[in-house]
Length: 539
Ligand code: AMP
Image (cartoon, rainbow, N blue to C red):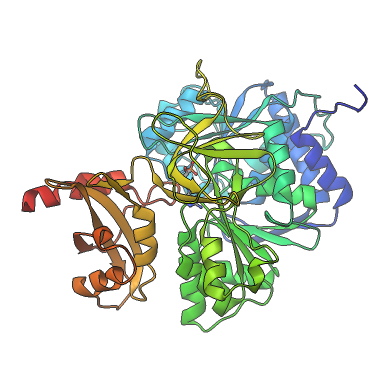
């Protein structure tokens, strides 16, 4: 060996941030509303105090520490304080059904759970069912820690770390040790855990700083709206310390007005989140005739970002959209859409169409599409099959599972995609959402994207509904924008002009809301349960 073989560790990211970007700010909306402001130099000693507090309570390497929390500075400290010790930071999604939360807390055997006061009622409901949890820590000071009826082992975070030394000897862990744990939303069966290694997270965080990914630097101010309880907020909390970027954490206030104010007052340059968040923000901007002063880029993913919204960001607000694809099993971003120098000369509409694709792999990740028999499909932009992924930060097996999740060394994503000759990937559907009509596939995502392009449509979902002749036919569900009237025929005409005739949905149903799950995705299972046989009934 001719080079040093230093492990890639999360504790090193913290110490790098504190030493090299000491005066860089972290601004955080506290759960009780105040704005908290400090620097990386202030943050690191508190992360070390947390590490000392956990060790002092007898917790050790491999123990799982849960969190049910917003994006805030104490949650950030715990990302480093917990993983740095060799313990596992288990971020839990508070939007899961309580029975699922109980399941994952028991499955992972969390010994301590950090929670925000907002979720005290949730803790009250689940605590009795989580026998492994020795301590519930409210991410607040004593004054903002509520008493929880029936739960005696509650302590305020500030009391837990008070008086602890501000130095800590971080252990030299293996870079392959588990650092963080996140469960998939569990669309089928019980949620499954993905245990991220230090190596996977550090590599992903470094990759995230690259210009064509998030392009983070000491000049950036990043506001991750994507929650720290979902895939480590796409590793942005780690990447910010790598790059020395100012971090703005919005806490529980995620509505358009609050996000906009925070973006303006803190001079945010880049943000990240699922498309639904941006709908609220854009609505606020339009209603109040506002513009961004500093925000120039936003990363989106989690579901497809409609071209119409990408265009609006570009045309009206001068914000470049970075559209990425990833999943719980891929740590964070695996592919990203981008405009090359040549693309910049293309007409606006073409540019937005390129961004609407899920893009190219970032270095360290490979993708391919396969047919039903596992044969690799050509990269021609039309052959669609299941997307397979492998690389430096992809899951190998689910937490506590004794069997590999891979097929011939590749992870099967359950997404249906095409890849073109340039390597650009487009998600066409989920295996279970794809609509098969008369033996041909119809993409529910493409139809939804076209439907939300109608000016009166706020949200759209397309499901395959059993059909006596065609096997399945598309049904479109629409939520209209406030005070907008829309007729079924108008929608069908709009779609007819834009998609193949046989793709036009057999029916359109107007609804007040669509069921949205814990990670911001429309729950198509629920829609299928409600509407799945409407065409059979009418046949
Ligand atoms: P989760 O593990 O809950 O984050 O869900 C991952 C799934 O979200 C992926 O397998 C895709 O089906 C979907 N997804 C993520 N990003 C995108 C995107 N940019 N476009 C379309 N679907 C996406």
